[in-house]
Length: 330
Image (cartoon, rainbow, N blue to C red; front, top):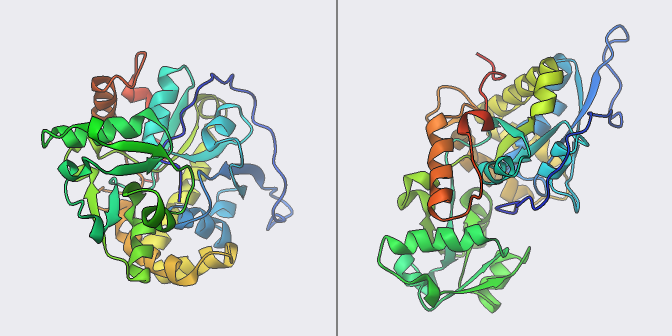
C-alpha cells in the first residue's frame, strides 16, 4: 500500500515545470496536447483508479492534456512536485501540513477520499480491540514520530500508557507476513489491506482513528501541486483537476469497469483484490461531500491543531493556503 507519511526533511526550491515524455499522440493535429505528469505516492492501487480512468477514457485529452502517470521511486511525490520535476502528485494532508511549515508551498487540489479510512489492524487472535489493548504489544511501522503520537493520542482516551507499546520499524514489509512473525498490529487502510484480509479469509480487529478523534479524520490521499504551478499555469491545473474529477466520478458510478481499466493499465495487480477494493471504495470517494474532491477548512485546521498539540509542527501553519477547491468542476 502506501507510506502513511512522507516527512520532508529538506526545503526544496520550486523550479520551472519541464516537459515530460510523450505517452500517446494527440487526437487532432490542429491541437497539440500539453504534456504533464502526475507522480503516485505508492504502487498503483484503487486510490489511483480515477487517474487511470481519466487517461484511458480520454478525459485528460478532452482537457487538452497528455498526462503521464509515473511511480515515485526513491524520491517521493512531494519532493518531485516541489522541485518542479512533476506538475502534479498524489500526496496526503499529513505531509502537506508538515511541508508548508518547512517553507515548501505544496497545495492540495482535491481530496481523493472524503474521510480517513485507516486504522490499527491486528489478527483477531491477538485480542486487540481497543487502544487500551495496545499495551504490552508490538507495533510495526515506518519510524515516523507521527505514528507514536497517533497511537498515544488514541491510548490517552482510555488512560493507557504508550510506553508499554514496543514500536519497531518494519518499513515496507507485508502486513500479513509481519503479524505472523514480528509484530502484533500495524496501521492499514481498509480499502486495500482490509479488503485483502477478507479475500484471504483472515479476520482482523481494526481500531479506526476516526472512532477516537474527529481531528484525525483528515484527507488521505489528495491530489497536489505547487503554488508556483498555480500561479504560472492555472489553466493547466484546472484542466488536470477537471479530467481527474471526471475519472473519479466514473469510478464512483462504474466501479467494475473502472477496476478493469486499472487492471488493464497495471496487469500485475491481483484481479480479485482490485475488483473487491474498487467496489468497497467507490462510495467512499465522495461520501457525504457535495462533489468529489471538495475539502473543508475545518478539516485542515483540526489536523494541524492536533499536530501542534502533539508537538509535531515546528512553525506557523496557515490552513487556508494549504488547499483549494477553486479548480474543481462546479
